[in-house]
Length: 468
Image 1: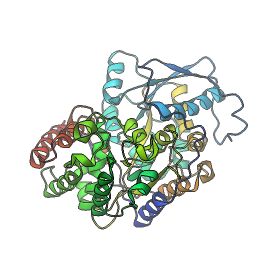
Image 2: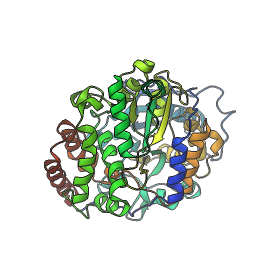
Image 3: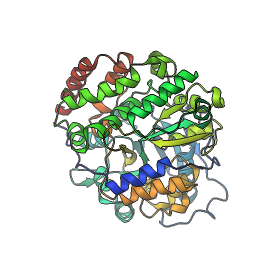
């Protein structure tokens, strides 16, 4: 059965401008509570959340939660390092208020395979935080998901625009709560390297390439790419493609209404190859980039000041947690500019993490109710590295004016935004390590001259995935 495509959600010009202006400002995020930003997981072992003493007096209660003493709740997500620590604080507060015993299990990058194996073994987690609307639809089609209960739905209706609710639904049933959103169109840079090399923030793709070459000539690798994590490469492609090909083509390609052999895809790959095709512009060269995971791509850009391994790293607002984990001060050591305009304007691509229930039970529904509330969003917002689409989250919860601006713009966009293209695709094409987009774009990073071959392989994989 063909995986249904979700309705197109568009970003208004005003919202894009607000996001771009917010990203371009001098950041001053606080590092308090952001964690150490390392990339160590517990190898799948459960970390039992314990209530945080004294937190209830600073967290207002806008939602009533049931008492769940004696009930156990298992939660899985891809998050590790600083993100896991921040999410654990959300789970801590839920445990404190309900009395439930909550355990967190990292899923690894392949959430679909992880959950599938647990379902096959008869022991799925109670709640999973999915990163792709395509995976949500696939899980719903397989009958793995439990619809949201009345209380969770009420919080969702109260706090989220229709577009975000639609992303968490399938065939008229509401399954998910988009707890965490992100702006995935930012380039973070080491201010000490920029100052030493005598360069400024670029606004266009050509300026970006010239800036990168000037930094390389100075003696520092310009761009850090986390190519070991294939999802970062899909983000590179999507930003180039959205800016260059435009919104209509973006929507068509996201739904596979045009083929990956289309001329617009060729043009985007050629453009991206202007960066990937010059190994001196990449930290560690192409092979080094393919061996670098996302957290390392960020920390190596901001460790060592002007002697860092790289000057710039592209990724979403969530990179802030890794930057502070590298002991760099955002707004001083690290600043950010919008992804450079390839076409007429800088792109803004959004992403998000959606909570779903895989087991019936009061505890799972209570957690989703909590995640749909402004109470839960406020906890992670204070930690940094987090943006919420919750329209009733008080902007003062964010630790600085720039994150407040990004959060306000996201809410102001309402139903009008562009969601990450690969996350909309079936997981076999857009969301699995070692196959589909992730693999083909990693192969492209290894050999940027093979544009037409990359297109053919992408189209072959997409055709199979969208027909299944």
